[in-house]
Length: 434
Image (cartoon, rainbow, N blue to C red):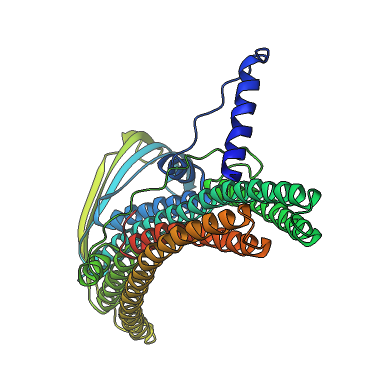
């Protein structure tokens, strides 16, 4: 009966609106945001992603720097000079404009430069892995905030229905009391039920506000900006079994790729440090164009200054540097050992994440099934209790108890649905999926 009353009130409100004067035209409301759009907004606005991209760009610059010694080093210069000297042979005046071009090329340094370049490239790969990790973390935070906001809005709908039901109970109990069919206790019990429903509705509406602020923050927009979301729950995805999830996680998790790159960078740093004990072979050459004259009193005239060139191949052999090279090798080898240990520890953590995420997903699926069954039974009990009370053979306490069970059933079912979506999102993150 209380459902019929609620439906009648809705019908009267809609009918009244239909016959009322047309309201003034208003700006169209923006379309509700779907989850994909929320994620796109977050990826565009998140400052951690911006910082990670800048870090990758800086590491690209380091790769360019590390590669530069392998390329020719070319220098040009122009010098204008005037000089005058006087001696026993007379006075000599020289005016010169010298243009020179010199070049040098590293031929071989036994892996020192290539080791530095390899380390820079590996560090770039580590930075790219770090960027992907930040992106996946941002996506997960948006999914969590989106589902929390969606479930919070559905809780409001539940609490509004609870309030409507409680108000119908109060109206009925008051009517029975006034005709002497029911005691005053039924009225006060129904009033308590209404007050509890009002409290629940207030809490639910505040949770909507809080989850909207959290979602806006996750998207990188003004926390107070209005944001309507599409209230359609995502499909319940079928996830791969545990063994496949673990293999995919070890292959795709950006943290694992980052750790692999850090190990390779440490290995290349060892190579570069070991190269310090070996010779460096390089070639260089220069050519100078001299445009000027030398006026000598002793020679009795002027003479042109000729051009000049030079070329050489050099071999530099480190003999002793106070054991600094040995210290650098020891440091690099220790860093390599630490990077390898960190990688193995990370892989263990990845497997832990996947196992934990699978356990939570299995539990969420079971709870969805059980809460849906409990909700169905709670609705049946509510109909029975309401029918008994309407027929005068049941007590008001049966109705309020049934209503409490129904509210709990609705709440548990919604929470289980939200937890299922979160469990899927967290398993996807544990597997390295976006």
